[in-house]
Image (cartoon, rainbow over all chains, first blue to last red; front, side, top):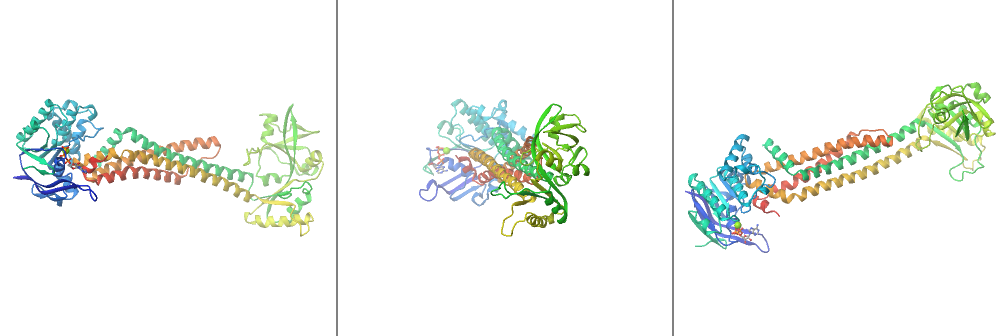
Length: 223
Length: 399
Ligand SMILES: Nc1ncnc2c1ncn2[C@@H]1O[C@H](COP(=O)(O)OP(=O)(O)OP(=O)(O)O)[C@@H](O)[C@H]1O
Ligand SMILES: [Mg+2]
């Protein structure tokens, strides 16, 4: 069953004098349970696609359907609710709150979801355990290595048990050892917990973990 | 949701201690400066009018000569002028003549130079003087020009220290005179002179033994009803012109001053000063406000990114708004309250130091508090609101 559908989606940055078309009519369907890898040269529109998929940004034209709901027709509030309840997002830069500990960062989505204090602490701890960082829960991001920060970001994305996990270059700046650990974590989420995963990567090795690879070129899918 | 936002806001304050501290400091300085200056200024105004009241209100002071060219040939007053005023002007509480001369006084081998004032018992009524101890002059003493005197506290302290001077004699030039009382202290006048630095004697005694003339250099009149001051002033002018035989085409060669006008001028001056201080303080409030504004705006980039993260992981606009509003309110209130406390301390200390009363002014307290608190809230909240309305991805990208 189609979980996500892009129908002729375009995204143009900037207005007036020099508009820049980042997506030029994207058509893509992603089914539930897939592990999709997006590849393509820098600037080909991968992050743009991810942002639209995560309801963080809206398309300039075309339709983006999430569970057959047209996201363009939702207001900010409803899109936030979609994000909160179904989506986990791992940013290309980690985007952790700088002055908050690992566990506070992971706990944050649960606070906004309105979970009770005890529940969210234990859920956050469990998520950190899953990414192997439970010993580091009280450290601020600036006391963590890049790989550890990336894993905090992953823990924050999965703590809400999302239906779909969007990961923008989750291994972008990690060594191969750490990358492999993170990929096996994603694989187990996909296979054991049935989480649909969309992942952007530049490395074929990482793409090999996926069930399907889509190549981007110049704002479109290369066929 | 409110409790969550409160906790998030308190966490944010705790995590950005420096920024929070600077914000609070800006508000403290602004609030404290305005309140302190205005409070002390009001105290000073009050103290000036208090002193003038102590000197005697409803007073008319009559001096020979005019402002311009106070020629030495303008005649002084005589006893008959005092009598005329006393007998022919209605509604008068007292008429006090003054003949003054500076002289050395000696007692118990101590030596002190002071102002000798020759007058009558009307001196007490008109000048609002009271006796600290002893008695006023007797009618017989005034009539015969007896050598009796009443000391101001400064003179008494210099000559007798803590001793009771009553019944003792002091030497003035070639005669001695008996101390019959001591005036209650009045302290410094508005003009900075020591009002207690005087020896009071019957007018006749001063005329005969010290001046060698019958001149009266000043007459002070106390009017019973403040509404009658102007008419009394007019009547006195008329009588004195007649007494001094001034032809119609000649200007007055004396002045009748209304103390109320002097009070008005003086309190007016201090009020202008208070306003000036208030203006200075308002500027410091503004500077404090701009400080707050700067701190808030400098951290906008960081905050916008933070807001982007919060929105991206599921915060609603209202969550973010509530958090930042609470943060701004908490910081502003802390700053405001500390500012009020500091202002009270500074005002009390400053008032003591300057010897003026401490007058708590609720309005200026509320005003200063509200003003700086609203600056804090405005500049803490408005940028946050703008960021919260962005697309999460735009907020994240903000540089
Ligand atoms: N906010 C923006 N304003 C203007 N142009 C933008 C903006 N965001 C992205 N772009 C442009 O859109 C194009 C696609 O950007 P996008 O981030 O999707 O690329 P990407 O495929 O993720 O590249 P990379 O592999 O380097 O992350 C790029 O040319 C980029 O310069
Ligand atoms: Mg990208």
